[in-house]
Structures are given as structure tokens and as C-alpha cells.
Length: 265
Length: 270
Image (cartoon, rainbow over all chains, first blue to last red; front, top):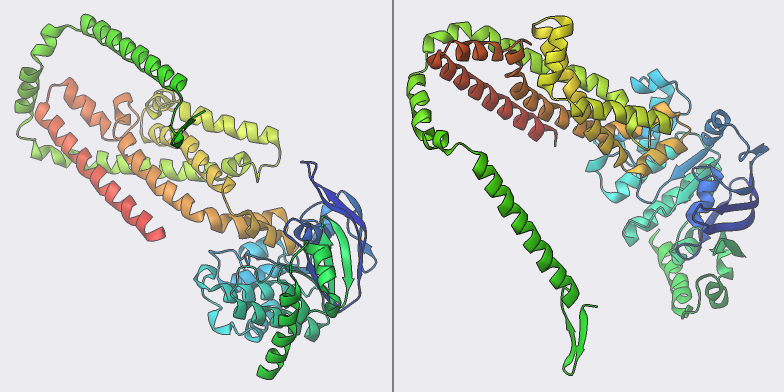
């Protein structure tokens, strides 16, 4: 379980990216975090694993309070949180396998990592994951040879091989075409279900958010303005989150899309 | 205010009248200074000697011809030495530059003071010509290949570290972030996320530097630091012009070959 208490971030520029966020995510729940650009979505998930240092508030992962950890303890805690990025963030000049295994860096020593001598179990697990996301045949390819969707699958493997309890997912589909976007979102969802993972998915595609998550949190200017089920996103709520716009079309489409999607699968 | 309102609509010009006049003024000043400088140089030149330059040049060239081919037997060893000086010197510089570059790059330096120290090493190395390094080292270590090798190494550290730390500062930080998020230590992050990104630059600059060093090490012999320059200065001092032309020919060939090799290697890694 993840609990945020009064989490806030003020950048040195004086920018209050995150005001005071309280949020509780039970085990195994997948939530979508929506909101306009600059609402603080990226800052929020980066404050959880402290890639960005929060300036106030507390983060509890289970019973562990993260914001007060020393850097050594933080590294240990980060192993419990897998992260997936918008631009995949694979190391382009390493192979697919090396990228997946880099998810184990928190568990192995420096020389083991340097010489690429990972434990047998890690390697077996890496192959199992690559097979699960349909990338087995690409294991020896260099990351820069892959397409966007393929890269994101590798990114997912890298996060999962950490054996995390929680996934922090930052705009996983923003660089992908609509079809690949759905496939990736479906894959993330399935994997969370298989493994009982909780996940926070930053996404600015409202449709995808509604299709693939049990709970939606709307963020606006660093404050949570909506927290509820996907079908609670009425035009009024979307106006509250994003501002005035004709939202009927967006919402109608959702229903059609869902029907269509079920018909296909 | 480059936009001027007219009856036919706004008119855009690159510069305002004031800016144009200022430019005209500074151009005129620049040209006058250049003309004065030209006059001063001309007054201090002994034109009498310059007039005979074509004659002197053709005289030397005729004395150089034909190159003394038999002298080649004595040149193989110095050529080999020259290449060794360049290669070993480059390798030494590469090894020392790696830590210096990581200390000097803003995103990897452990502390601003360490960064200042690393930048100081870089500047010191670059500000002294390899011939001067060699002069000093011959004095300390005695004449020979060792002094030359270390001179080349010392001179190369600066340029090498500079290009390498700039590459480190320009990496894609998101890849580092991703590795950091797995719980990797700082050293692991460097090995997994930074080294793969700067490796092509590292190799490319290394080969480029080696190529420069082959050229640089051909003159080290002038101060006794080994290599083919020793033969060159010997032949010039004894006015053995046919040997000089032979040596120049060998240097030319060596440089062409080294340039060809470095072009090949750079092509292969990109």
C-alpha cells in the first residue's frame, strides 16, 4: 500500500509544482493520474521514488517512510518500485537483455554489474519476462534497433524484473501510435493483475485512462480535484480538471470504444 | 525598432538607421587599423632578402633532389619509435583523462572543488606545447623515447578530457534517471547509463588524437625526445639536403597512413 501525506514540491524557480497531495493506493490497485500539462503529474510520481526530492510531506510504502531515508536505504526502497518512462529511457547502446537486467542493479554489486555476471535466476527471469511480452527473439538486439512499442515492452520488463510492489508509470503511451498505445496499456494492466501490483499511471489520454483503470485521479495545478471511478468523469468534472471545452464527444466515444474493444477480444 | 510604419503598411528592415551607422563606423575603424598594421610590417621587412626568396627556395629544392633513397635503411627504427611515442602517449592520456573527465563534468563531479581541480589539470596540459613539455622532460628524464612519450601524453590529457567531459555533460539524462530508479548505485549508474552513451566519443576522440600525435611526435626529436625528428635536425645541421628530403617524404607517408587508419576506425564506430 502506498500513502502520500501532504506531499509537496516547490522548485528552486519558486514554481509550486505540487501543493499538498494526500492519496492512498491499496495493494493491487491501478490508478490513472490525469491532468493538463504542467499539472504536476510527473513531479508527483518522481517525488514518490525521490528522483525529485519533495519539499514537504511524507510518502509511506507499506510501513516504510521514504522521504527521510538515507541514500543507501533509499536505493533499497527503490527496488520495490518499478518505473516506466514516456520515451522508454532504455540505454540505447546496450542490448535488450542488458537493459532488462539493469533492473536488477539494485540487487547486485558493482563488479557483478560491470562484468555482466548476473545470477542465473535473474537471467532466467529476464527470459521469462521477455517471452511474456513477446520480445524473446529480440534479446540480443541493441535497444536502438527497436520500434517504439518494442522499446516500451523492454522498459516494462526492466521495471518488472525488480519484483516491485508498485509501478510508477510516466506517460507510457505519449510517444506511441493509438493501436500500440492500447496494446501497451493492456499489457501493463494484465501484468499488474497477474502479479497483484499497484500502479500509478500518468496519462493525458482520458479515453485510455477510462478504459484501463479502476480509479481515476485528476490533478490540476498541483492539487487533486477528482478522485473516483472512470465513469464519474462527467463533462463538468473534465471542465474542472482541464478547463472549458466541449467534452461530450470525448465521453460518448468512450462507450463506443469499449464496446468495440470487447467485441474484438 | 526595425519595423517602420508607412502608408502602404509596415516595412521591415534588419537594422535601424542608428545600428547601420554604427556598423559602418566600426568597419571603417577596423580597415584603418589593418592598413596601419600592414604599413608597419612592411617597413620592418628587409625586402632585399624577400626578393631573393624564389631563388633561394629553388636552390634548396634542387639540392634536395633526388632524395637519398639509401638513407631509408637508417630511418625504419626512428619511424617505428615515432609511431610508438604517439601510440603509447595517446594511451597514457586516455587512461588519465577518464577520471579527469568524470571529475570535470558538471553532472558527475563529486564536488565543485574537485571540478575546479580537474579543469585546472585540463588547462595546464593544454596550455603547454608538446615540444616544450619534451624540452622540460628531456631535462628531467634525459633524452630518449620515454621523455617524448610522456610529453605527448601530458599534452593530450587536456584536449582529451575536455572533449570527453563535454560529451558526458551532453548525455541524455533520462537514461540515467531510469537506471537510478532501479536502485542502482552512483558507480553502477555511470557504468550502465553514462559509459555506453560516451563510448563512441571516447573512441572517436582517441583515434583523432592519435592521428594528431603521430604528426606531433615527428618533431620531438628536435629537442632530443626520440623519434624521427632527431635524424631531421641532424641532417639539417650537416646540410645533407638529400637526406632531409628523404625524411620529409617518410614523414609525409607516415602521416597519410595514420590519417587513413583513423578515418577508417572513426567510420567503423559511428
